[in-house]
Length: 254
Image (cartoon, one colour):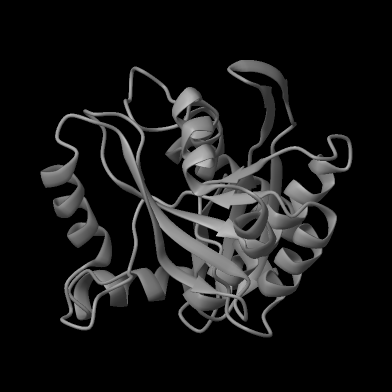
């Protein structure tokens, strides 16, 4: 899993900090937690930041699977990337190395022609047909060009319904119901319906307020905050102006 927070917002550009956490499990037994990875980058838009965050996460995963060929790769994100972006290229490299890739995002923007949420529709239908049962539904979408198959799963009778993305090659070789059963086996019973490995790495990837403050201090130290004419001083001035505009002129819009 990966998380990002804005270190400084200077209006025309932002400095973003990213943190990636990952691990290896054999069944429900934890084998290894990788060292968290931190990256910092200047971006001009939130779209650029999102693409960069996905790229950092996918590159970290690709490095981890080198030592575990044939492993099922489970990500806390959708497997859809804009064509031509660095994240799309990183995803293709990952799939070429290990096509057993599954994405389990916490939300979905897929909608029916009526405008209704596809996940909400399937959830309501599943609730009527399989009351008090776990179930899976496939496909919501199958697209070879995008290299993805998308379904829905309810891993626990008391759990929520999640969208489940699978790499195209995996969708051809593995039964979706079988994959759902594997994930149900991994679920965390303190949070029914959600795999324990994803919960652990999600918590590890969080950037707390204290950690964010420390990252800011370290960055400013690198930029030379002691000098009045330094880049750091200019950055603080620009960032302060941007925060003032966001809070007082734009009604608190970040």
